[in-house]
Amino acid sequence: MKVALVNHNLGSGGVEKLIYDMAVEMKNNNIDVDIVLLTSVNGVYDDFLKGKGINIIHLSNKWDIYSPKNIFRLVKVLKKYDVVHTHIYSAQLWTAFASYLLPKEIKYITTEHSTTNRRRGNKIFRIIDRWMYSRYDKVVSITSEVKKELENWIGKNKNTDIVIENGIKLNDYITAKPNKREEFNLEVGDKILIMISRFSPPKDHATLIDAMAHLDPEYKLLLVGEGELKEQCINQVKNLKIEDRVLFLGYRRDVPNLLKMCDGAILSSFYEGLPISALEIMASGIPFIASDVPGLTDLVKNCGILFKQGKTLELKGKIKEVMENKKIKEEVVARGTEKSERYSIENKVKEYLTLYKN
Image 1: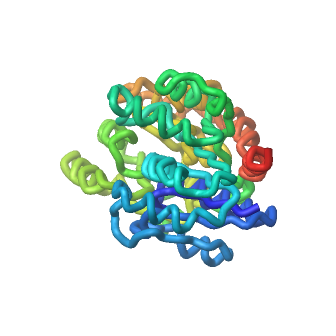
Image 2: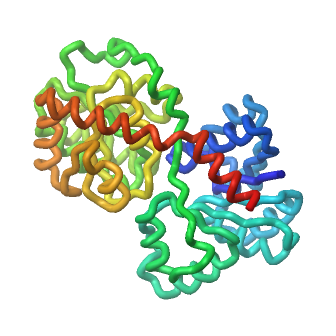
Image 3: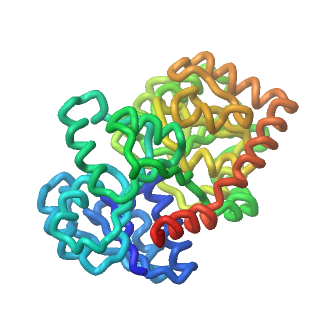
């Protein structure tokens, strides 16, 4: 069986990390897997995958992921595969068009990663999306909540009945050794918080940064990731005069070690699907504080602390509650660690391979 995992690129987001882990695990299962990308721009995982013997095919070296030219680029490349599995809208859309010109024997799978997006609410996009998803043999949702919201948008269909949750390489996080604090000019008594997320509007770093300004000086924040709003967040930190307490670390390959060094982790998003960083946090055995929004509420409930999205002072209070109450901290860590066990990438890839074959 020859499989193509198709996406716009391999940037530093959670979907890209999932594709990376899926490809590696598929290769471990002797699956002939390639990764097909619309662009080579921001390909942070490319070299690591090549080092593991996984072939990456770039259709362009420009950021033209919304160009119709991608239809014909995909047709040239995808005709040799048994299964074509897409992620993210641009890859989903152009592959749907390309499917008219490709062999009918190919199976088309796509994964829906979020409870909402900017298209929803627009009647024209509803028509486009209904057609687009209809071109796939199966549309996999990463949670039942994602499935529900998708079906509310395009209607219930026999091809939307599958849920396969995201997964991670659990052992990487369970056995990781913590980084040394002195590498980051952090002191033994510092309370270190971390947020791992791309700097984009849905993630709402601004609320967390504002909360930091209200916390005591021993609270320090590590921000891991890249994205279009990074400079805006850097300026916010400067304006609040907390540059000595907020560190921008960019894209990191040592996330398991960073998490082990930290005392707590936060996601302040407006909405999510099933964020990879949330699974990483729980597997690492540190307390998790998240906004009470679709994609996080069900995941974090009973194994983390929720706050009302955008409420800076409430977030500040929840951080202090967890960091300064040993009993609460131990309880949420224990439940989070237990829950993380269901998200092994090995099991999730087995579910996908069963779907491909059936």
